[in-house]
Length: 171
Length: 194
Image (cartoon, rainbow over all chains, first blue to last red; front, top):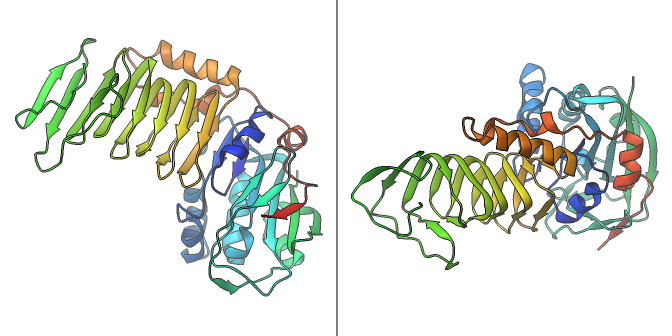
């Protein structure tokens, strides 16, 4: 099962349809997931918020891949930690989390961008222009410490200034 | 079987052809609906229904419907004014309005711009226009769909569609490696700026 924390798109569904897997869409931007996580007090309230922003848990299904494109920068580290822990609880051992964050610039869009995959697996940034806010530019170390049981498997800086991370859930 | 822009006095209660109880309440302050499709029955904007709907003709919902909707061989359109809080089973489902519940379609589900959909979608083809809002799961694997729809059809006479759990029937699993490869999860794909 693929968990996409961004908005749904026909292109993404067409791509994932070839993998014959179920897709869970959370759309954190439209459904207020980011605010709910950032405003919750660390502890039980935050963990409860993390459960509530994800789709209902099904007993016989688990996350294989989580897509977190342009999301970590918009969460506090506590919120990110709670979210990744909650995803980890729903995931199979060895599950992957793929994240993209803007890293090279000191500022970022006010809201997370929208990325559409192409047939050949590339991502196109289809975000609308918006006001800029200061980017936290979390370091790989900070992200690694606040990703629950996920560990960084790969990280690289892309030509457009985004940092790409692949996390893997430890057994 | 469905209202076609008919105006009643206050609240009505009737039986459809399958014996299902339909309850609708008329709100005179709201304007009547206008059908865009001459062949589809219309539940107008002034109509509220709590209960099970079943039929053998295309249907457009512009009013409020809660319960279950079953149009096994026909198309359902949820118009811009339509609000459906129900499990829905149809040949094809197009959403311009708002739904909260599971959508099962044997052919396709189309979510149009500005539509708001929360729930699970089980259909071989799903399209979501930019500007539409969706939260839930999508199952497009044919084997899983057959199982889900088979369960639904079998239980349709005495069990609401919304009680079927699509995930429970979703037997097609994929390993992270295979899924990453097949899905092109862009582990190695460079990001582009449009």
